[in-house]
Amino acid sequence: MSRKPELKGRAARLARLFPVGRANQAARTPFVLLVVLLLGSGLIGLLVLNSALSEGSFKLDDLQKQTKSLTDEEQALQRDIDAYSAPDALQRRARELGMVPGGDPAFLGSDGTVKGVPSTAALRATSQPPAPEAI
Image (cartoon, rainbow, N blue to C red; front, side, top):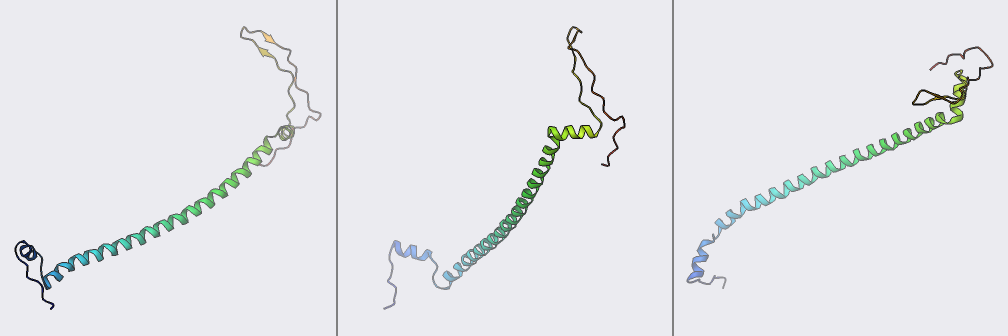
């Protein structure tokens, strides 16, 4: 009962094109090996790609921490600059250096005339030069 039916005509010619028995199994072996090789190399490629992405993620995290640290430092330095640039701080520092407020200015016109009446700066109460500061 397990007999194969006899093929006739065109079906018989087509059936002869397909290998029968051991030849069929031998033809599948290279294909199976190729599929296994492709799957294995694909898995290895995914593993390498995943490792590279993880490494990049760690580097990104480190760089973000470094950026935050440098931003905090920049803000602290900007606060220092703002404190030193304030008008009262500049005036105090100028007085420490022995500077005095200037008098009224005079301006020269394009034709060479003097506009305004210049005045001299007020003299300091003490005539001693300020002590040099250590930088």
